[in-house]
Length: 154
Length: 82
Image (cartoon, rainbow over all chains, first blue to last red; front, side, top):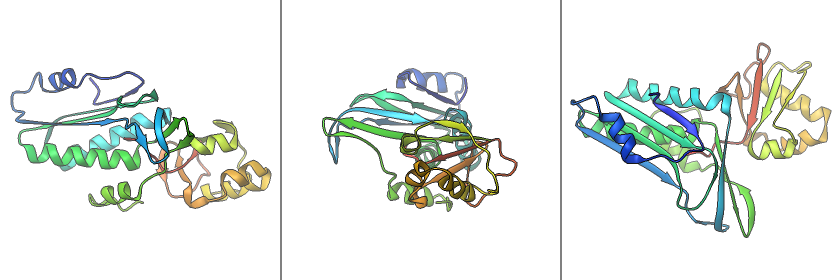
């Protein structure tokens, strides 16, 4: 199974963890991060969030981020799933799983993967509600979070 | 070359992709200036260049990167996934 999936389908976190750890008895730690669609935004209640992406680039960009995490930490397994298309409040958007012998590598690599994903993977969120629709602005806090890993590109 | 636009840039330009003759432009930033000269749609879409990111042949690069050998140039706002 590829480490990276991008598509409209929802995912089963338990099934993904089971698949990642099934054949490796040396794994001592699995960290799971799930991103969800929040209902309340600064503009008002959200009816729908749409994830647009750059199909020609998204898979390779995520694979590159995964490869960089595997270079930095001794990981036994990595899984990244990012959904695209229309989503509703409460829906899952993104899953990052990291598995390693010990928890430090798994915790740090999961945080790294999310920070880099937010600043390097070509996804764009559009929020729609009774108030209208608008593209989500990039947050400086996300650039700062990525910079702590030595990412000085932004 | 094929030029792609995403998110609000796609909406403001009015298409997701188009074939573009870059003319004298040799960098992504020069291509933006060239497009702005050709049609006011681009002047509006690219009004704030600080809000524009670019990928050349599906790799994110700086705006002053060369495009002479490029097959695909994509312009988009800062990414907001995750």
